[in-house]
Every structure is written in C-alpha cells, then in structure tokens.
Image 1 (cartoon, rainbow, N blue to C red):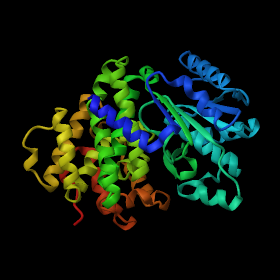
Image 2: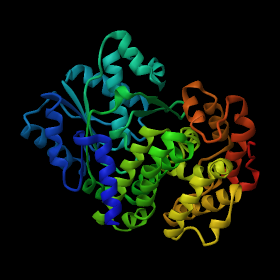
Image 3: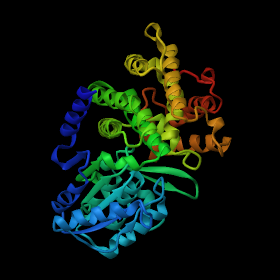
Image 4: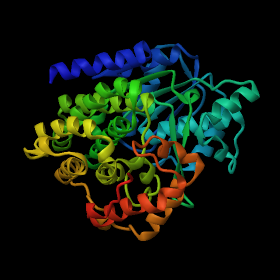
Amino acid sequence: MRERLTGAREMLAQFKGRDYVYGLDCFDRLGGQVAELGKRASVVTSGIGKDWGRPIHERTTSSLAAAGVARAGDLIPGAKPNAPREDVFRIATALKEQAPDVVVAVGGGSVIDAAKAAAVCWRLGGQEGDIDGYFGVGQVSERLGAAGVRMPPLVAAQLASGSAAHLTKYSNVTDTQTWQKKLIVDEAIVPPKALFDYAMTATMSKDFTSDGALDGVAHALEVFYGAKGDVLAKARPVALLAIDLIVNNVKAACADPDDLAAREALGLGTDLGGYAIMIGGTNGGHLTSFSLVDVLAHGRACALMNPYYTVFFAPAIEPQLRELAGIFRQAGYLAGGGSRLKGRELGVAVAEAMLALSRDIGFPTTLGEVEGFSDAHIERALTAAKNPQLEMKLKNMPVPLSAALIDDYMGPILEAAKSGDFGVIRSLE
C-alpha cells in the first residue's frame, strides 16, 4: 500500500505542482494559498448555521487572517447537492456585492461547482435564464475573450472525497424544474490554487463516503474506457491506480470514519480520478446520471449505470477490461477463471464484479429498485443524450453514438439497468 500511496502523490505533484496542497492535517495552509492571489476574499462555504460547520468557518477565517487576507463580507452560504441554478445566481449576486480580489470555496463538490459557475455569472454578467450559454465545451473562454475580461481567481478547499471539483475544468449545474443536470467544461474555471485536507473527510457519513468514492471510480473508469492512443497511454496508470486505491479502501472508510489511512487512500484515489478527467473525459455513466439527480446521488447513479455500459462497450475495450479484472479479483469481487474470457463475456464478468462491490457497500444495482424511479427517467435520459450541450459525453464513448443511434442502443442499456438483465443490451458492430 505504501508504494501505491507514494505513486499517487508523485502523480498529483506532476499534475498540479505547488498549486495544490493536500494530505493529512494541512487545512491551515489555506490562507497562504489565498494570499498569493489576493488580499480581500469572499468565502463561499457549506455548513452555515450547522454545528459541524462552525469549526471549519473559524479555521478558514483564522487561516486567512494569519496570511494577511481580509474577508470581503459575510460568509456566503454554499449550494445544495447538485448545485441548483438558484444557488448559483444567489452566490453570483453576493460576489457582485462583495467585489473581492479572490473567491474562496470551502465545501464539497456541489459548493465548488456552484462557486465556479457563480464566478462566471458575476464576471460575465449572467442573469437567470441565460446561464445556458455557458454550458458545453469552451463557451466561457469564448465569452471572456469577446468581453476582454478574465475570470476572478478562485481557491477551492475540498471537504469531501469524490468529485475532485477543486482540480478540474468542470462545473455541474442542475435545473430543478426539469431535474436535468448540465455541464460547463472550460479551462478558464480550473481553480488556480486548491487544498484538500483528507483528515477533514472523517466527518462524512457512510452514504456520503461511498457516493463520493464511487464517483471517483467512475471518473477513472470512464476515461480509461474512452481514451485512445497517446491519451490512453497517459491516462492508464492514473486511472488504474485511482480505481485500485478506491476499490480496496472504500469499505474500510465506511466501516470506520476515523480510519485516516483509508481516508487518505480515498482522497488520493478520488484526486487521481480528477486528474484522469483532465486527461480524457467521462461518457455513458455520467451522461445518464445527469438525468437521475432527483432519485439518486451522483456517485451512486454512476456506479449503478457503469456495469451496464461496460457490457455494451466490452468488445471495444478488452485490454482495459483485463486490467480491471485483475484489480477486482485481488479485491475479492471477481472469481477466478475470468482470464480466459473475451469480449462481451469478459465485460459481463467485470460488470458483475462492479455490482458485487456496490452490493458490498449497500448500493442498489438496478434502477428498478430505486425509490421514485420511473420510465419517465429513461425518456429524460434519452432526450438529454441528444442535446448538443452534452455531445462530448457521446464522443468520449469507446463505442461512439450519434443522436440517431440513441434510442436503438442506449435505450436497451437503460432497460437493462432497470431490470438487471444484461441480455437485452445490443452490441453495435
């Protein structure tokens, strides 16, 4: 294990250098990170009005003050899960009023995603109704260039192992009227400085811990499936180590929240998941998860869907599946004999191993057993997959689908996920 942890640290150092502070008991270094970017900071944070949040807020303010950074105003409440649009606009209004030199986001992935999107709206003057123009790839950079302005610097202090929002170019925002999540993908919103004290994750609940962990697996897994050529060569060691660390430590972290060795392994693993999605991109599991936000936590939705996409992709990703089979076999989730399988049969074996992990940590393995799920979610997911703003997910698939093929091939994948029957999944030759 020590060698794997060392390898993860070396990869993160290569990825972010001194712009990223991470490890156990490093939170008080936040002020130093912020001071390099400005002297007046707006702080967007979770836990306002909560007993568990008070120590975090006090440590944040103390660290800023020690580094000579003043707060630009009152703490700004963060966002609800999945970063609803309403929270984004509320935060953007507060940032406009406080007019800071630097924005500091302290929270989990939804808080950081909302702060990123709010900083975009503040800088570009986005009002409710026109945030849609920022969704997709590179739209923010294009508008910044046209306006002749730059993003305000943002320092992201992560509190939860999972999304790796503190390291990436992604901001997920949810329309709670339609319960559809959309995505801003832009280098302009990468936080120039970030911090993650893995010891802070000991307060995460069992469900929150497992959801975040399997989100990290999904990041690494989907990139590993979809990358090709030089991108695959770069992503492969990052993705495999991320999956290895998470699969072998998530159960221990859930069983004992104060197991700091497991917490550190999950933090490093999910951070590597963030590194992976900066090398390549996610695809099927994430795409469908965006339409399930009202019935499933994000990591749980990805964990449920990826085994079924694995069977669909299997003929195109046999080398990747062999390496994944080794990880799941060592972790005790895949029985012996899988090394002789090929193509779709190998995909089914790996998919079954993924479902075994989900069962082991109490996750559902079919959509049919999810409270509140209905066929309307399948229709929502199929419609969303045809939206040009989410086209990057289709292009990232190892078996790319055009909008014209969605109903014929993604439809059966979703039906399989509903029933648990891999047999209904159609292969695209």
